[in-house]
Image (spheres, rainbow, N blue to C red):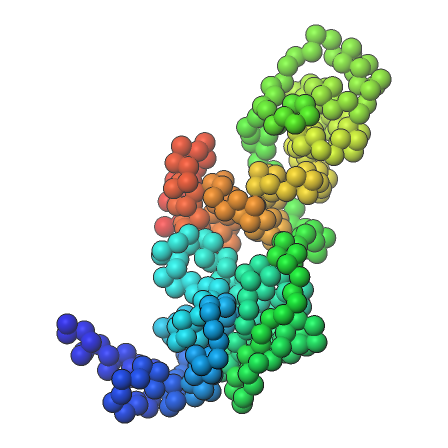
Length: 403
């Protein structure tokens, strides 16, 4: 009961130099409020800026317009920056219209890893000059209105914001335009933009690494006939290796035969021979995910990382499910390809947000990038989803490292 009396003046004086007269209008402060954002203490500012001065008066008029003219609950996107300091998502707060994300508190109430991904995605949405990326975000989150006010203009560079005006030719309409605020309404964005784009694997520089000793950990999977699922296949010793070689020579595209011979070669340490026979069968059987994965495993064990990446990627693109994307991401992490691994983990979690292992792999990645708080959140989510997972012990070790 004491807090409203003692806390309200303290909170108001912390931001607003001018206080409104006594009123029951909870939005009256917007008409006179300005605040300073200290860039040396909080993130989000453009480079080499010490303090941002924000004037909220244009927001007062825009808030009144939205409340008077927008019916229903269309989704409005604005800066997701920290609500209590940068005053992000203020339009959603002051109108009741839904928005895409405000990570503060959401990362306590929901999955913090996915909240962080969405938060970074909306930050990129305002900063990027790539129109296609903006369209993909609009379609993915079914955004109806885009709000550009004083906060967006202060925190995001003009090059990214100007692209919204360029998009008015085909995809956006200006429905509100006053000094300080522009509101765009979305129209005619094809729904297929919501599908994650293919990752350009040639766009990032290689960072050669060393594959782990357990690069072949766990059972190798092979498709068991048409319409069947993937089943674990053990390395069955052939009665006569020469006979198996002859069978493959006579039928080099026979996936099961080649799979068996490649396993024998691998067990004998003949990795290049295994990769050679698998190359023929893999090209002929693009839907045999087990053959594609074994090919990638053996290439990786032989140190041929770029070829292994291509094999795993072909499998994932042929069958874009969480397991195949996770397989590719695991290899990329082992080889030090962190940018590629992060992009592929995004695809894995888009395919199944509740699959546990991608959270473990993301925790590994975030630790390598020295982001321990996010790594802890990912690893904790992994353990919540599957506390008996074979990687659970390793996850506990990584959590200790992240403290």
